[in-house]
Structures are given as structure tokens and as C-alpha cells.
Image (cartoon, rainbow, N blue to C red):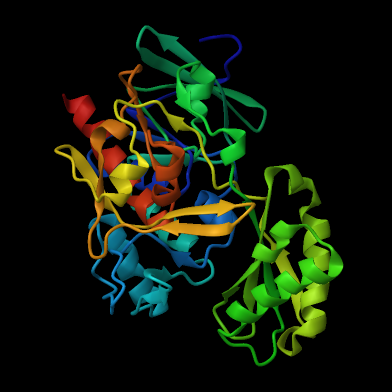
Length: 397
């Protein structure tokens, strides 16, 4: 054993990142009989969806502008439908919710973490290692051979046959020094920062209109930065609670708490329903909508998404619009054809330079614009499932 290593772990598949795509990848690989290690730097499952308190699953359904949309009519089957059935049986979620031209599945507080934990606990072949940070990768020729990680001061060497990168930012490619796709600074989107608000009195869905209105007034009357006018409101599990979402540039992330305090004071001073409202908690950090993808055998493009393109090696379906949060315009949407979908080919999951590296979730090989569609939870879950199946296929082959 390497003297610098305290422990060696051997597995068939190591999955980096325990967000929705990572958990689904680990569970699927384990269901296919593989020994799986799921590595996560934080102390919880669910990644950005969990720490940013997401209240709906986007990307599960086709773009059906006329509606209605049956809760079971998901674009992809498998784990997507397992989630639908879980929310129905445990939380009585039996209907989709329409937001503009799209349909989403409501996500009650703590339900996502409960679902992912249930999934993972059902698989004896999959073990998770939380609070574990990857810091080095060994590469031999066109293969990755081992990872180095630290957990509670202990150094761990992980040996594997396949690695699946579900980190959200191509951590594996970065550490291995292999090509990955980057985002130009001028194309960077606004980041999100969310606060849970409680003690709302007489609230209803009209706050989804009133809050942005007063956010715009805050900018106009107080001379605040223009991007704060893109602040939105999301209804909570009850009418007495909701979520305030600010959207701020990367360069302003350190000022998030100052901005939140000022805009919250202004809004509560003008909205009767929120005059006694309080902030109960905030998201653990500002979350970036952009990501860096692994350079794969094929790069999914904006034209593929909007043209509802199908592929011979398509592994999952997507239909969420290309959603961009721009500093100069706010939210911009470009929609997939109504009642249609695009496919993501298997080649987007496979590295073009490393034979045993698979990417999933936001890490797949896709253009900046295409990521604006694939980064949502429903699509990432199915991508995780597809990557777990691909790992099994590659090992057996």
C-alpha cells in the first residue's frame, strides 16, 4: 500500500457526486449487479436540488401547451416514474402544476432527500461515502486507474473499472488534465440564491406577481443593481410560506446577504401579506447555472434541442426549454416543439479521450445553450440512470 494512503477501496464503478444524477447512476449500476461506490463532498444527498431548496421537478414532461398533463405521463420511464409513485404514496402528490408553457411535479419539503435515501438504501451493492473530496486521479494511457480522496483527515485510494462524473462541473476531467468544455465569461448566467420566508399572512399565488413587481420598484426607487429586479417568488407547501429567489452575477456572490436583507426589507415594507414575514433559512450557497462538460464523442447543440432531433443511439428524452438567466434580460426561454422531444445520444455520455470515463447530469458533452435545457432535475435523473446502464454495458463487454 502507498504509504501516503490510509485505506484502499476497490469497486466496479465509482460515481463522483451524489446529486440526483449521481444517486440514480449508482442505484442503476448496483441494480445491474455491479459493486458501486458513491462519493460526495458534502454531508447529504441531492446536490444542488437539495441545498437550493427546489420546490418542483422540472423536465419530466413534454411541452404540452394545451394540457392537461397526467402525472404519470413522463418522458422517460424507470426512476422518473418511481419518483412519481413515491410522491403520490408518501405525500399525496397526484397532479402536475402548470407554470407558463410547461408542467412540473411539485416537490414537498424534504421529499427529495427521502426518495434518494430510500433508493440508495435499497441497494446492498451500492455504498456512499459522504464528506469525501477527490483531490487526485491516476491515468494510464487512455484509462483512469485510481482516484485519491480525503475523508475526515484519512487518505483513501479508490480503484475501479469505470468512473461516472456527476459532479456538475467535470471534476474528473479537471483533475485528470483531459479536455472539457468551458463557458465564456460573457455567456455566464446569473446565479441563484434562495431564502425560505415564513409567517406570510393571507398569501396566495398572486405573490408570484406581486414580489417581482416590488423587486422592480426596489431597483427603480432605491438605485439598486438592475439584476435584483429579476427576483422571483415560489409558493411553499402552505400559503403561510414561500421562497424568495434572487438572481445575481458571479461577481456579486459575496454580497448576497447584503442584497437579500435590503430587498426583503423593501418588499415586506410594501406588501401587506408579508409585513410580519421572516426569513427562516437560506440556501447553503449561491448556485451556478453554468457548468463545464466532459469533452465527449458528440456535443449536443442548441439546434439539436430546438429541432427535437432524434438519434440512433439516443438514450433519454428531453423537452425542457432552453432556459437562460441573463444579466441584461432576465429569464429567456426557447421552447422545444410542442408535444415533441429531443434525444440525448449515448455519445454525449462517453469521453472522447478516456475509455472508462462516463459523464452524467450537467457534466455531459453539450454546448452552453443545450445545458440550459438538460440541467433540470427530471432530465438529470434519467441521465444518471442511463449512465449507470452504460457502465454495466461497458464492463460486461
